[in-house]
Length: 313
Ligand SMILES: [Zn+2]
Image (cartoon, rainbow, N blue to C red; front, side):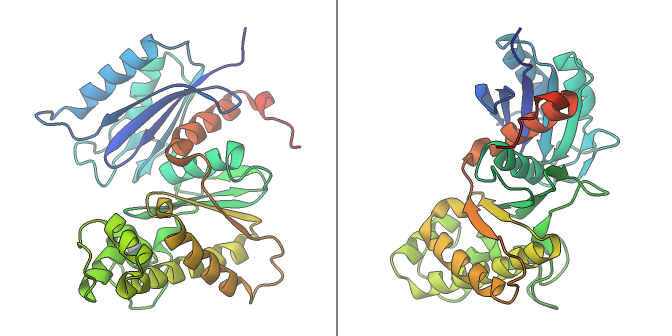
């Protein structure tokens, strides 16, 4: 008999991703379904049908790991993702139990799953204390402390997007003001660039990134401002937790050097004042869009089968 397999599920705003993952982090099969489909108002039924069909074609799984956009209620096993109106208190753990035929189900945050995936098999390999950050429409994160995923009291540990960057600063989607997300998310940088006369279209961050790449000064200023805010939050997290690595992923980070260079520069500048944090490498996601399913599945596998955890090398 081979090593046990896990079903990883990653619930994002626009899609749910599925993967069969082995103990080495290899994805043996994957699938994704959109959360919004034309003429479809029963997402839960479509979810069940999709999972049933996906598992029918795969080898049996021993456990299921779910990483979901919040809010989630780990003790109740329910999720209510902000951007998926059809799911309020959706009992995803019960559904997964029935569909996979195993009681071994783990529910964690989507960015926590990304962080654990990168820690176990991606750009975080070899670290002990790591923050994984997803910079996209919003900004999420997950913390690995002393080699274990740190969930926190309400499964929100590492949620760096709502650290305050500026007291009484820009309004944030959460209802507060001055959060990092209000400066460094894709929509925040796009809105700021448009309001300050950037010629690029004001809808998508990709256009701002392209304009910055072509030396548009307003697009570059929007990114400098956003990455400066993010760098401060990363430095705060590094000092608070004595991190040895930070791994940044998500759609904004995928824009490449127009993001990487200003963030690396601002982060190095912020860390100059904390020389006692001796190791603080900033890396980019190695697993990309699969970090979430791999991390969720790996978290479930290691909870169910602790003996599978590889010996550190
Ligand atoms: Zn906020």
